[in-house]
Image (cartoon, rainbow, N blue to C red; front, side):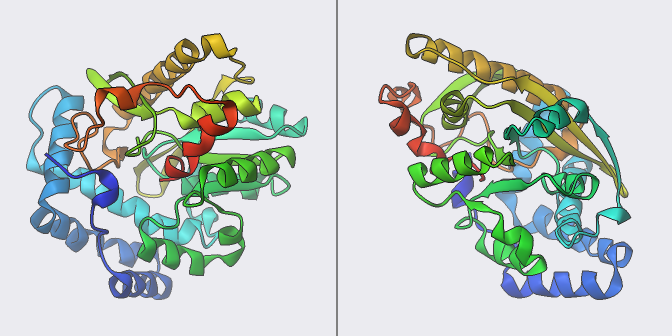
Length: 327
């Protein structure tokens, strides 16, 4: 039905993105939001694969065929959060109304000097996490991001805030380098945020129920958590329209601790729990789901033996992280 997500052509080129940024910087957020209408129209008319996959996803979550208007709303919501990234990464967070919940547990870990893994997804806006820097500037946030994917957008966002860009852990490196960088940041008591919903071709995955059918989720982030044994929290930045976001933190684990003989069953249980929480928030904010490819029946599906958990040592187990996290 659709190509693998990483093979999808990036929407807009460098020139178009630069023009969009320039208009937003000069005219402000409200006038720039008028541009979201032609952007939505472009994706509806010219990006058939994304349109079909949006309709397929919405039909699944609504339990009925999705309308073209609902697909348009889905795309418009995505475009709105992309626009807001320009302002969030410019540290203009005060222009947004962000309601935050679940901070008590996160602050407890950070106040104790413990690093925390923040596991997010392509649901809503991960950049809204930047409001934490305003509330508690002493806490460091390191985001794992694949700079090799979506280069035009990555380069544009880098120009918005060089300080934030310098804190990114580049997931396009080899897996051991990424794992070492994450471990070093956690040792410094930082929050390390990464996206853990997209399966990567060639990386170990686990199929678990999600929105009524099995879906493949990456294994490497959970193996990393088991190796590092640090607290894991889930983070969701849900766009509610206008200037409103809900930033939700949920405690997931005080520290994943799996014996080798329990690893396969233990990782499977962790991924299943994660998928259940992700599904809860997807149903709560269905237009915030920004995986515009067939999440359940990809035409690039891995062969059955690729879905098995790896049997190598701990260091090798997390070597796939650079191909999985931060996508």
